[in-house]
Image (cartoon, rainbow, N blue to C red; front, side, top):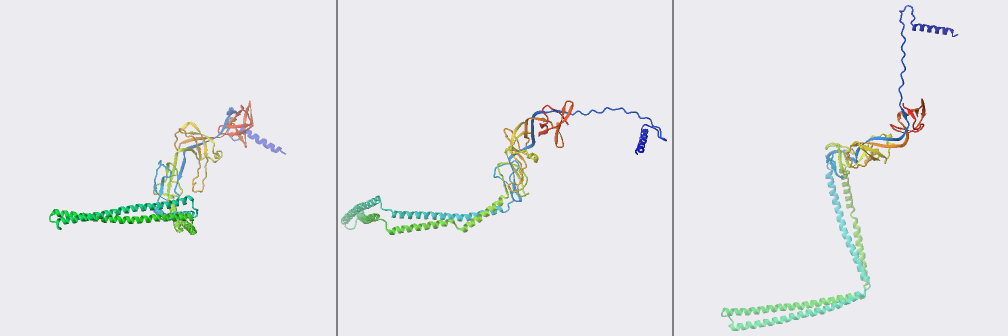
Length: 513
């Protein structure tokens, strides 16, 4: 049944061969016979590199780029919106902690603050004055209580032998004093009396002399000499009478002094005697009761004075209101001011006077270049997962390319928070390092190498020798003239070395890709 088909196929094949062999087709021009092509040798395949399995250090390192930064680096800002009135600093200025850096236009706030402070001072002065007065009142009341208690203690105490003897001696001394007064006063009076008698005799003598002078000149002086004699005689009489009057006054005074002195001395004897009698008799009940009442009165006065120390509630209320006004006004003023948070240097100023400033938007950057660290920005999240605080790193500064030093990861990036105290995230890694004698400026570049993992005596091959397919890794081992595929288990993978854990051995030759 397949014969017709086969015959047709053979016929078609014969026609095709005839056409290819140059057989003439009726009606077609003749075609010359084609020359046989010269055979070319097949190109030799490129020789692939080979690698020998070796032992050595395989280290997984993370290389990052950092810049020198000040450890103290802070952006400062206003905490309220406003227009900048004054910028007190410029870039590179050195400032100390608390220095006023910038200020908004505060309007009438300074005057309002002064008025509030005056009101507070006035209210506080009233309280202080009342407190001082009360303090004195309390002290006086305390002294009164102490005096009253001492008085009662004296009354309640039985007489002591020494006190009684002292009282007796006081009586005796008073009596002796009276005797001395009488003796002394009497002597003074006697002397004054004698002076009176002597002065009286002098008066009589002067009068007699005057009478004789008058008798001699016959009553009326005839010459100037007689006049002088009469005048002298009269003057002598006058002087004698004056002396007599003075002596009489002294005598009267001596008598009075004697009486007064004797009276005083007798009074002292009486007082000493009464004191002795009271001491011997003991306190009277009425005196004790009065002393007790005096203590209670003093205690009541003390309690009243102490209660007055609480002050006038209305005055205290005014002080509290004034304090609140001052605090609020100061807070509004401070919200429009920026101070240096630490000793340092101004690194950047981003506004000028007259420009508007937004609350919490940084306008000044201040640094302290004394202490420095390395800042690494833009690290991939996958790399950050391999880094931890305290890890050691190797640092090469561009300024000192041949002097690598060791450093330590001190801080990892922090995320943005919603509190006003942390308005900016810190996306950088901070690396500490010993500065030593190196002269570094903020902004200097450095390469940081972080060794994540290492094996000092591991089998390894370059990445070009290890192949992968369908989630498996293998190598092509040159075994004499033969090649064979061997699956391998890898460990640390770096850009230039791959650790071989199992599958091949040291010295094996592997064909690269």
